[in-house]
Amino acid sequence: MSDPRTTVIVITHNRRDELLHTLDRLAALPERPPVTVVDNASTDHTAHAVRTHHPGVTLLTPGRNLGAAGRNLAARLATTPYLAFCDDDSWWEPGSLTGAADLLQAHPRIATVTARILVHPTPAQAPPTPAEELSLQAPFTPAEQPPAEPFEDPIVTELRHSPLPRPPWLPTPALGSFLAAATVLRTDAFRTAGGFSPRLWLGGEEELLAADLAAHGWWLTYADHLTAHHRPSPHRDTRLRRRHGIRNTLWSTWLRRSAPAALRRTAHLARTVPRDATSARAFAEAAAGICWILRERRPVPRAVEDRLRLLDTPQKTSAARRYVG
Image 1: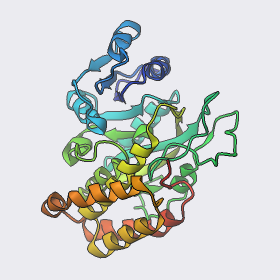
Image 2 (image 1 turned 45 degrees about the horizontal axis):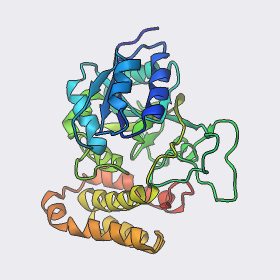
Image 3 (image 1 turned 90 degrees about the vertical axis):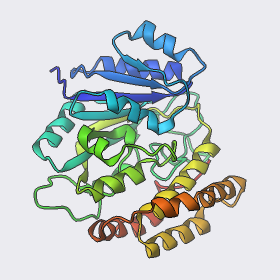
Image 4 (image 1 turned 135 degrees about the horizontal axis):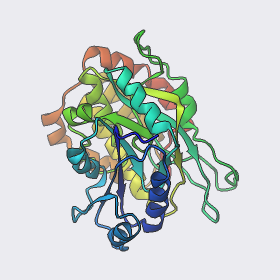
């Protein structure tokens, strides 16, 4: 069942053991996809471990932490028509890469295919909580215990029942954004849209790229028959992720949404994010970028803005989209 159409790109930073688990899972896929790992300046001997245990993997070591933009580096070198992103704590279900490639090949106007997400709880791990707006983690209160078996990420219900209208030729739900670690993308669309913004670094970085893809006429979709797995890493700075998530949401909104929509979303975030030093710093960092925001602001076309406006209310009431940590 070898399928050479898709390159899997994994970014990592100081999660050697989790990365090796992910690479083991990817190596077992029947598609036998080429895999590229971007080591974002790890200090835990990640690069040595990859070379030792997975010598067939292409390893890129830029020498500094590029965040999500590390995927851009790998995408420049890819020779396949499609790219599948992974985090170092996620992997793909056997057959899903082929299913996504088939969908992209059959419908040339689709840029991204996002899969159903199954969350795997980790033993002896603190209950995971979402740290950015589009999280791959499930919301638990401290008193709750994660279930023993894998479960659907709460965001899946929203993806499955997306309110966006779709053209007659699109067989699956249309989306306004995507989750990188569970998405297969068209390589030329990714490159044309410019990839992930280095300014945003990491945390909700998908929203800006999604808007740019839509502005170029591409469609984003969800495919319920495809599955990506996620075992949330306990090694993460949740406050840093929340700070970047809030900042990046503001930047993406200010850069691409209409002025009324940007004002409404800014006001909503100001009312609803936790009132603490982390949120205050996020707003301060966002405000500090106002000069380049005004210089680079390019609102999406009216048709795209109309679609995104349909998501404003569901996002505000979503239980899966929270800023915590």
